[in-house]
Image (cartoon, rainbow over all chains, first blue to last red; front, side):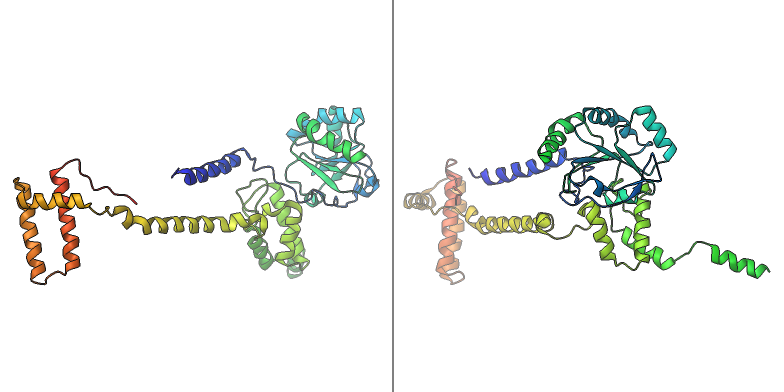
Length: 173
Length: 194
């Protein structure tokens, strides 16, 4: 009984430290969640003469996927994005981050193109506005143009099934 | 001719602002690189760090203050970019937790120390025990009791000559009796308690 209090204190401390062990320091929570998606107007990858801007997607739920042909994990998530676009659940837009246009187009030819539109963020400025610190990163944007979810790192089947798809369903209603 | 060329060369060279560079680095030292998380923006060789340093540089050129630039970065990357996290309800535990723990520990230590003499004090001897001690002192035949007897005689004379007062004498006497009892009866222990 005498040691009950220190014991409780000890268990609580161990609990906190244990929780810390399972946290991934590379998952930095984004302050942009529940905030309007930053506006931009960038040249399209396929037709650089035309531009795309997020306001064109007002009233729709959509995904913005940052990727690059030099990015290895992008290769890993790509088949999933292709399958997602074929299923027609949600339109996927691409932010081609600090890439070379030719390489990016080759990459899409080789791997398949799941994107409705791709834009070129050659100097990475829009990436900075979106708080991108490691491609791939994927943003789920709702009808009002508000970012509702950010996937840091490749989109996985688990993230898709447990978080992204249910969120898309509830946001599309 | 050469001087004109030299002038042109100087004008054409990229602008060099030692003050600006210093200011950029000064601010970049307080910010965390998100790619190599244990490096500052100033130290990191990551491409993103270079881009962000460039952003800071441009914004400084545009006359923005350090605070505005820091806000620009935290709006995009969160408080995580700050090596010195802001004081707000979410970080109270971080900023003040150690002091709370220190205060709690100090209070616990003080309370323990206050009780310390009590923990060391013995319960007073019972009437019975005192009677037995007096008997041992008077009639005990072992060499040990002899020693105690001599000590007691000395205490008595100290008291009689006024060297110690009655209170001190009584305290010393009880202590002596206690030692005597512990000595002569191994089962007798000064029971220390609260």
